[in-house]
Length: 193
Picture: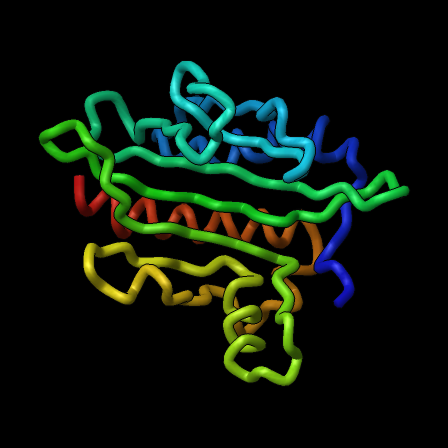
């Protein structure tokens, strides 16, 4: 499979941080969200993640940022970019956004996830179920998280009807992720709060 889109490595280091910080800004009603590159992730690729006030180690999947001061809603956002061997280009491997609800014990409970795996490919091109699941996962797709429920393993694609256009460039996938994050923010978080 041909990668969905390629960008120069310089884009990831120089331009992407501003793009991500800007599209996460509405989650804080216009306030800034701190973001940074995660050191020591060479085998995974170039990892860029959001955090609240201070980074908490190198485990970016544990980094959180609060929706608003004193809010019970927390988020996690990270991207993994994979450099192509022998080239000055990379591809977006993952863009993941998670929503958590703080319960009275101060524990953060997963609520919903928006994932995007643009270069997901089936191991067996003849396995219809695997091909279908990979196509659902390539664009932004929603996971609804509930305890003791099969729904977390379900992928609800948000852009399936125009996946080729969504996966055409860094700008189009950014727009799709931003729009999807906005929907989650306003339909889940704002209504919940």
